[in-house]
Length: 357
Image (cartoon, rainbow, N blue to C red):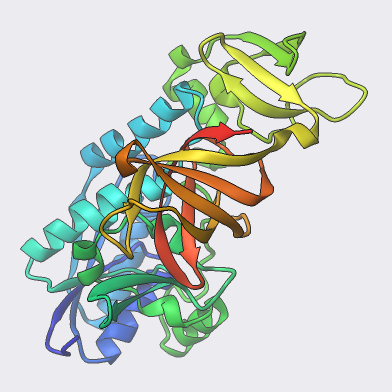
């Protein structure tokens, strides 16, 4: 990208986005900072500390700093979705939703209106243009432990062509080191690992406070239908969960399914948490335009899981994907995302609709 291009940097007040701004400025780009306010509960983008810290960094770098309010859109597209998914017995991924609708949606649109040619974020992933396919590709960040490509699989060609991810070529340790050398005021600021709008990282307390109507006590049953105990509400449980069941048994029990229709939490042995595959919906493919033929790839069923080889086949004219894994996967969870990889290239992904035993 030409150095006279104007770049908007999404600044959360953290070290990653702050270094992103510093690096691009050092490379000769004309940049300005933008901090999003997302919700009153947000500890990161949207919190007063985030705005203050981002402003300090902007002042240190001598760049303009804007604050944009996305409370309404964030509530509709992230918070309401978060609660709705739990009410339907699914486990949502709010970071995927936020990236898709807010950061790479509303923010991109507004930054282009402000005169930016592109937007940069502090994500640990890479975007490259492939001359052979004439497509922008999303690749894993070089830091395997920090790679965030999983939460970016919803990006389309337009978004990919208008975003820069400068930290994809660095490790987190290198990021901290460079921030120190540049004397950035947030060089030693600790990271926030959890969901930004959940106080104290307690999603159960959040649901109890914000959506008590979706919580109805019911039975905890085994896979044969025998009643073993009582639950406080299906949304407070997730597939694979062991702790907090309140059941005494001869062997450890895990949540293996959530039956919203009959208001039951289904538990079983650890072996019963494993499944052969899944069906995914809301598909997005980055490396191709259509999905008409089966293909073999590797996939992850959640952010922290390891990749496993699988066969992906189209269903419903390519609107759904049937995914069968070479090895059974533990705790495949409806509502989470399955993301497909070709080595370090993100092929695409979708939202897990149902489990195939």
